[in-house]
Image (cartoon, rainbow, N blue to C red):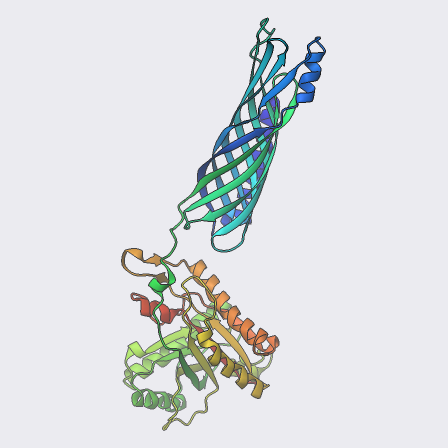
Length: 482
């Protein structure tokens, strides 16, 4: 019992260490359980048995019963996609042999094996459904032997023994959906019997595993992807209003510049605008964020109240000191960073505009699978145009912005997308575009960067499939050298 307690205690410490590690906060952690059944095979040491019997003056022939039906019931906790701890009960069945001495004397031995196990399981996904895994652990097995002799009763006909040994195994898992999977496994249990022999029992089994608290797979992509034509639209930053230090109010001369935006949005009533507030890095980040938001809000208020632009067409966002366009170590750089940008949809006819665009953005509405970042060949032509533009203008760099929605599907099949999932997939989408531009179109990676926004910049509430698709997008922002 001391040996058992020591072993369980050691494994308990390992479990606690894992629970307090970064594994324990992985987004894909869950409890699971299941059962396997299959064929068990024993490696019976005939030579040893025969040697023991011949020592008593008996010449024998031996017939083995070395196959049986085995099963196991298990449960575990998967900390991430690559590691789990698993415990369970196993029953390896019954095995035996019959030793015969002419003319009719027989000696029969049988053993039944069952016990408990605790394994560390390492997994490696191959694709969305297949994964391979290996396990290494301990088994606490109870061996019950029984012996019968056709001539006389054995001294101890029913010995038994409990012992701790190692076990190991490999397997393949196929997932029918996010909750239910099927396993095929091969395992080896090291076993001690009750009469001083050690041996191996192999279990080849098939089973099911069920994950608790995991959402079922999303509907097939055709159910949530709405066929659309490729949409590519230019957005221009047509306004650059500087602000004085720690000031958020609009100056009189700047109101004349805002009239340019009013003229444009009045002429093109379907356009929308994002008013971006920025600051230098003097002061705390929290103060600068609030100040930049105040600047953006004041511009929106002026456009609504004085120039009569509908509030639904405007959005104010404060970025604080996170997006400088100049060096904050100089007074001139700080002044340039204290600014307002008005980012609105470009048009080929920009009559009434006297402010030269400081930058422009290519917004490509790419039909991403809800949880994927693969680029459809439909968009290759548009990305080729982006690459050609960058090659022709070698002083320009580009930032690829990835975006995601907050939900997938409608009605009873609607699923919420967590902020963590949205941020991860938006980064993957941005990186996919960068990789395509570099690997397939020859753009230098040093001229490209990525920025992920998750679902924080949705352009649609996402109550319809079409709206959800609009939120799954990538923007490419061209940055001009100063």
